[in-house]
Image 1 (cartoon, helix red, strand yellow):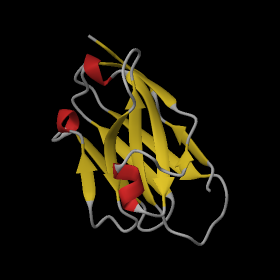
Image 2 (cartoon, one colour):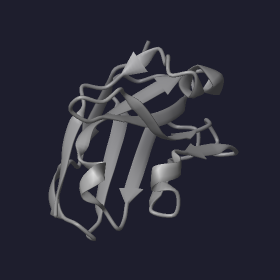
Image 3 (cartoon, helix red, strand yellow):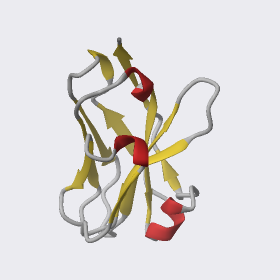
Image 4 (cartoon, one colour):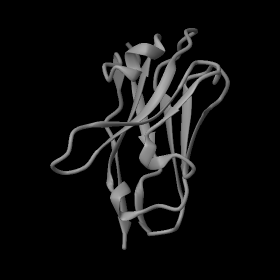
Length: 123
């Protein structure tokens, strides 16, 4: 539905911060709810944070509440994930996702996925 490209991943020390960004690679006049998922080795893909098209509703996994903040540039298809106080358990490939319906994201079946960016947190 829309092509997404993530950036900002890397290797950081526990307790430090990192910001991921994701943007649509194609021009569109549509607005999307967007989200960040992550998948660590041996684990299922997990919804980390999600936001509606205008930011009225947000969702965070319990494991990141108070540490991560999702935001987007108004209704445009650019989304960020500010990750503070990173822990080794946050190590995973992080995937950007988008869908015109927020509920599709919370159900784990968004229509669009990015390729993923690796985040590694050293202890």
